[in-house]
Image (cartoon, rainbow, N blue to C red; front, side, top):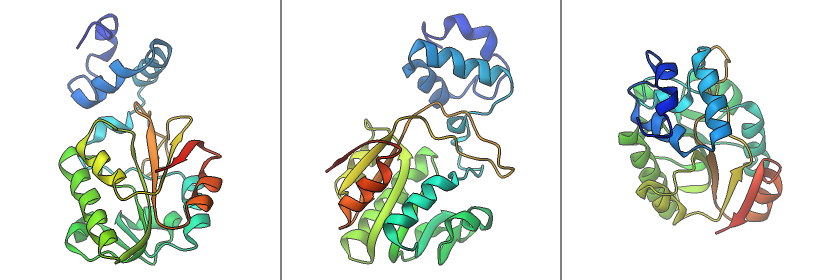
Length: 212
């Protein structure tokens, strides 16, 4: 599991992330103090958000980020990767749960997107947003993703974006019972649209931002 994690081999044995390469890589990339804290939380039973990148589990965005998105967008017409529980906070006019396959539908209006983090899905959701934005079906969009700047999907998404904010701390996504996960990677909040100043003024309270 790498020299950075060698001393924690016993601590990670029989945990949910023991064989999860994405989660282990996220731990390796951490600063030593952060890594030690995250592993202590995992030992106590915390479930890392990134450890469930299979796409089979639901994780929800904390309300303060949705409130900020609503401040920028005014309203959310569509959340294409959502559920009934999540939409109680997002309040999108339309949402597509997993069983309705948002990738097969047309996206329109103001979009909030926190896509499935499964590697085989996240790129497809980003490509879908890019397609509808370039076709002028989507007028504005705010996307919450991991700050995976080395990936193709991230760089493709940036190509249509107007601004970005990197939160100063990792976002603790919520499980269906409202319990926060243990984030092993930082996030990026990406905006596509014309209201760049409003986006940055609103989301800079969470971290560092810039126009693109």
